[in-house]
Image (cartoon, rainbow, N blue to C red):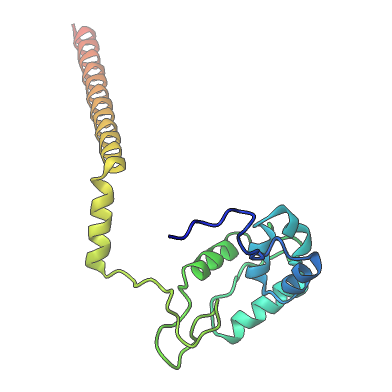
Length: 186
């Protein structure tokens, strides 16, 4: 029977953070803009090491253009800072990248743009219209959906109440106008 190794007996397995800073700099200098940005925000140590400067942003935009992928079309694209860099459109492109949305699963296509393989095995299958409807239906009738239904019911009740009060106000206004007209003729 073998006993589990204690922490002092286990073999040392280096991690990215345990490597020297020189290796971090070497790795960070070979990353594309999305990867460098992700590394930059992964750890405080890497924030100062990963460079996401203008040159890297332009290289990324050119690479996307040559692969015939969507590019930010904002006229207000400021290359100076990551936060101002094409604002919402870059965030959407990064989200699509994380989901392997731009990768291709068929042989001979672009392949996986993240891992550089010929076929992307990480891409999730897209839902058909029927599956999307079922998913939406499940959400609407889940616990969150129940809350939304109660909120809709309350809004409908408030709308009906407001409409009834408006109807009563108009009826009273019409009645008082009729009384005034009768008083004038008498």
